[in-house]
Image (cartoon, rainbow, N blue to C red; front, side, top):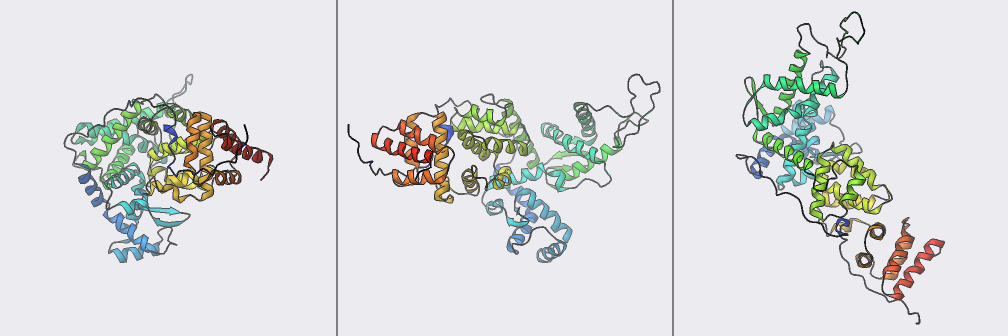
Length: 470
């Protein structure tokens, strides 16, 4: 056989396949989409109610968007200007400003306020509106600060316990006596202290001769009448109910509390998330992020997204996002791609963390694509946000994932997804991009490709990278 000049093969520009589809398909084991309780308004009506409740926050966000980009925090002077422009008091403006930030209508980047992506979608995207309102519901304790006289430890316990009172309101499908909620709050706070293995104040240690009560600096001690902090917990329950009412989740009546239509729907959604978590499709819910992602590598996109959703629902969103990004920083390129697929399921709560990693070279292409799609770009066009070098780096990283976990024909097909028009141009830019797996990728591609001339050129390129040649 004689050697031949490598062909100037044209490469078709195709969108990169998600890595979750790179391996064999798995049966779709996700359950049918559940229906909300009877009597729940349709989503357009729920979105209308959310828009009505947040009209003031939207006005403040639009006012901020029209201001100078230097606006970072709402100073007294800025609040006064906004109040004059909107015809409201400075206190109302501050409340709406805080809500606009919690909902995602306003984003702070390096001390500068910018319109949030949700503000752009507010009038046309009901899902964005409802997700924003749920974000405000989750932040109810920030929307209405706790009484200054309350003990911080007691406030923290109530903030942790109150969300577990909401299912009672949802399942009751009607008003619930506040005294009943107070009883449940007492029990839940006691459970939290037991879980932390706290020794109750006022109880002598075993072996002590004189069971003299010990003062409780946090106000948790047992009172002389046998009740435990009733006045404080009752006051904090009142604060919590008022805060939830202020965001539109419930209505406080004479001695009763009842969920609004929005609150009822939101609690139902959260209960469904818990059910999804309990019925984790592939059984990865309790695993760390890296192990969960490896377990999802063999799933098709639908079941994989269901697994990501279950995993996210089972843990605090902030720590889950951090864990996914830590997994993405590892040496396994497959986990990098899958981690950002899971972050797509996480949605808006992941945006600040994803923006924060844009300057990390190994995560930058993935983060830029995530942000582009999150801000409304069509997935087919999202690659346009990458520079030529970033797209080439991503091509090599995906090829590394395929070479480690996929099959040879898939690696050959991956050649067609390169942004370069010819194989020689691709090899030249791959050598220049500096990916740490370049040599291994080129060697694997040379071994897999059926064209001897092209395989020879790829091997030569791998040798040049290995030896530091041009």
